[in-house]
Length: 212
Picture 1 (cartoon, one colour):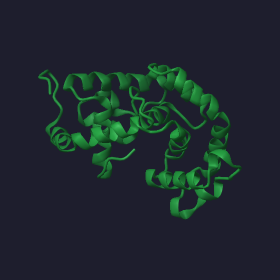
Picture 2 (spheres, rainbow, N blue to C red):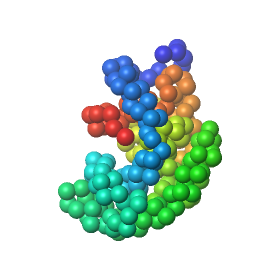
Picture 3 (spheres, rainbow, N blue to C red):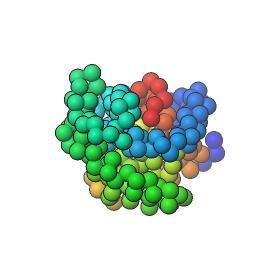
């Protein structure tokens, strides 16, 4: 790590040292996601807010098995299933069905805005019902497009522990989101750790494993 006025706390630095290779492997896997899987990664990011990530993953696997993208499948029973219950299932079902109609256009935006990560995030945020800035960034990360930050409340907790004071409160609008994002990106440069790696480190500390 570079020597500078700010240091990554020893607690995080020690875990990062242990998990660094696995984190980088996971990030490389994101970049290898085939284009045919983009739609279901977007489904996953619609399902995760205020629901368990493992439940969202289970539902997506069932959507894939039943070819939701190309059939008239009603996903509502899957979302309501107690085995993998998704909160706000009625609204999220509507969002999934809308996404299916929109996705050919979304795919074109992703392709045509290669290298314009922040602009693409704005397009996804305004185009996909159920996506805020966090969900758009999450989707982009999951298909190997890095740059925007995923400001989940769990991430904010760790940012605050690292001394990023703007993370004390969850962002309530675009301006406050960007304020925290800029502070985090500056911090990553100061401690010489890529933001994407730090993000997966924080999540691994929350869940016990490196997930998406």
